[in-house]
Amino acid sequence: MNFKRIVKLGCGALGAAAAVMALSTAAISEGHGGDVKIGMITTLTGGGAGLGIDIRDGFMLAVEQSGKDNIEVFVEDDQRKPEIAVQLADKLIQSEQVDIMTGIVWSNLALAVIPSATAQGKFYISPNAGPTQLAGRGCHENYFNVAWQNDNLHEAAGAYTNSAGLSNTFILAPNYPAGQDALTGFKRMYEGELAGEVYTRLGQTDYAAEIAQIRASGADSVFFFLPGGMGISFLKQYADSGIDLPVVGPAFSFDQGILQAVGAAALGVKNTSQWSKDIDNAANAAFVETFEAKYGRLPSLYASQGFDAANLIISAMGKADITDQDAFRAALLEADFDSVRGDFEFGNNQHPIQDIYVREVIQEGDVFTNKIVSTGLTDHQDIYAAECAL
Image (cartoon, rainbow, N blue to C red; front, side):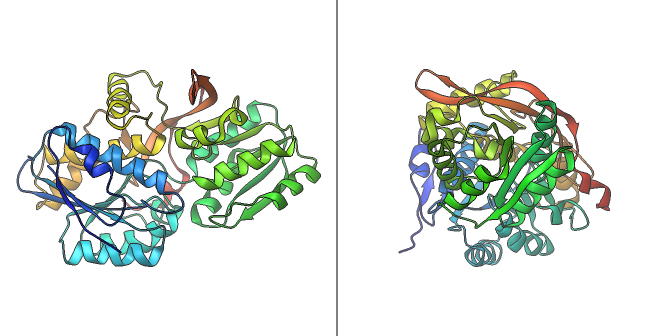
């Protein structure tokens, strides 16, 4: 049964909001002018819940740390279903009259919600999904992506695979917009042959058939994009298969939550990310420390993106009133905040121009995590920006 709970967040109250797993609302908040209402639709239950929980927790940590008292955040669970995401967006826009939308994890849900939200004059700040369709000709002045365009981390993985001397890679990803962008991005940079190319079912947990194909393919390596529980299932089954081929992937397949579930089987794997807990700047060090203190776990890539998304909004609130959309939009574009990634810049399509790192899975005590070993791409902008008229 759905329920709603309103939680006033003061000192030490964030943990109570973090415990709300179904449809819930948290009221928190000073800004340049009046109140700002933010509608967060994300995945809090079912498959992929860990991703949405991390986005929410990173976002709410930033709001709490801001000390502002005129931000109201409505948090809703999309259950990873596009039809529910659309219903929730309609409710938040029409009934709650939110000013800004955020939170969606999955590209198919983003494509169902974002064009309608921006068409209704709402800002959408993406903390994750960056589908091709919204980065190029479908870009919009009210749509900002704080994370990346979907292809980017996969492009860096393709470039790394070349530098590692791997030339016959088997590639696989789920058959949905982000999965399609993943393999497109990898192939854009990769210079070798493909031993195989497979699209799996979104939410799939049994990869016996795909692993058999890898075994028979003659591949010298494997690249895969399988976020959340899909990646956990694949990695465990791959490790049990006895196949001894190098594995490369984006951070989504080797992020903090996944690594704890997979364990030693992931050690040594190289993966690509625009963020890592060991990026050396004061904002990132403080974020990692305070997130772990608040929630009792290391932050993930998704948590860092939620944190940056909130701080982008807060920075704009310091310069403009949300009722002046042109001024607020300009303030968002300035991105005048201390990102956990260091310097932060938007391109013309309002997606980041940023470095993407190569990380290696390591073990620190009892915790499996990542460390940066090189920079894969420097000041990288997505290819679709050239098609955006902004």
